Amino acid sequence: AQCLVANFRHGTAQLGVALAPHVRRTGWPLLGVVLFVDEVFRSNRLRKLYVEVPANNIPQLSTGVHRLFQWEATFAEHEYFEGGYQDVHFYSLTYERFQNEKQF
Image (cartoon, rainbow, N blue to C red; front, side, top):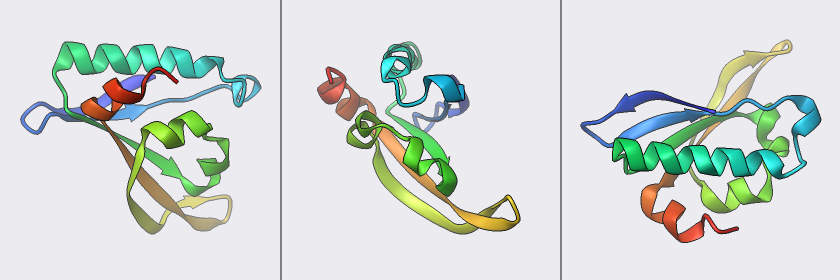
């Protein structure tokens, strides 16, 4: 996981997470992401993190991600992938929601 494009004036940043195929849907990488997000929020005094998810990756998201992150927007046919354009979905996680829901 990594924190990208931090905007301290607005208290936002973009969160990037890449998982190897063999650990997807196992559940345990989510703990590492939760610990990382906790540190990002605490050490940077951010109020909101964003994630950008291409349509082909939506099925790989765990139910925990859907519970924590809230849909913000979709850019239709935004990204070229395997011969065609696909939608890209944007989700957000506020500090308040994270604090209330991180014990999943």
